[in-house]
Length: 125
Length: 385
Image 1: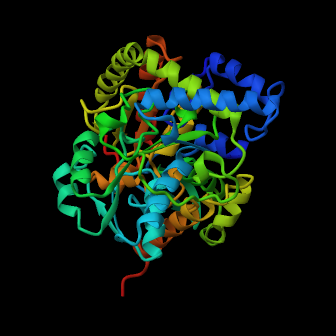
Image 2: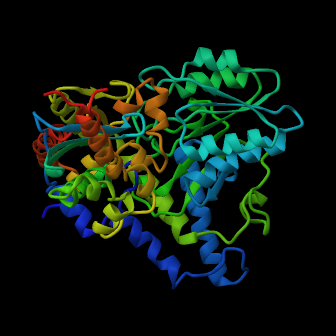
């Protein structure tokens, strides 16, 4: 049911863990529906230099989290914000239709981490 | 890689003896049991023998057996059949929150057609209380349907006691015995049931065939109209090979069940005690009133499907009540009805043992699971070490 690429990211997820001195942290989903993604980013000169994740969820949830960390690393914040869930699914050579909505949250998790970074670094009025 | 199948509540392989008994009815004895000539008579004889065998195993009469396409059809025929036939006597139906969807969805569909439905809760072990059944019975209750044992958590219900109560109130009583056929005693007199449904592929018979016991005098509207087969209760040329396979498999399972149950209980209890050693693990279902082959646990902080994928990579087949595997956005309705939180229910794992499983298999599974759980927990934002 899953593509080889999904299984690859599921069995060998990239960038699992936390960044203790992260520039931004984002969390989306809820345990009720069975998917929670938490993402940590390190930002230097507007570029994501490091990114890590932890995910509670099914195979698709873990694989999409892993995939987006690869896609976002080294990108500017503006570039990273352009990544969509659809692009993550495509990079994984597709997801089963039933998983497209419930477990494809990685772009939201990354977006939440970037928003957190922006909030922290916004000039205080 | 060695493959270990531990999902016997989902389905079982056809036993060689069963397959052998079935084979002639696909070609050499291919006749239609309704035909008068010799081919037809041979098929009729096989069908009659199978019916005699099944009815004897249930302590019933041959005319009380209706062959079906399986458990879902049996449950639908029992529920809709009685509801339609008895709707002039009343329109109230009682069932429980942990039934298989074949029962639950049939009852909920009838509710949309104007029937009134009471869905009884269960306790934390998944048990239906006979007192609650009694309290829910009304003068216009026509049918009660409570499963014999639950397919997910293995809890065995006090069917005989519930049946006696239902009978006293004059309603009909159906039990879904799909998980208990070939495992527990299914004597319909001892169980106090009016209708009982079974499915062959759960006891090493073929898929696509089942049987429904219908007590003499119970009126039933058919789901399928057409020919006069099965005493007009189920039209359509009989699945002769499948029915022969069902009877053979049922007979073998009943013959061996005590010895096999004792073996399975040992393996089951070894699995339960081994898995319970993993921190943040709970065992679901009743510990004593439990199917001999059922293990159901929840591992906190992780999700079921990712566990199944990891087990599959190691050659182990199991199942889970997580949303991803239940085909909806919610995890198992059974675990939720037992009071588990959504979060915990997503992390359920069911292992159901069978004939081919050995002590070695159990030890292998016990050796693999802790590492999988640990690895997924290390990846989980819910787990704090």
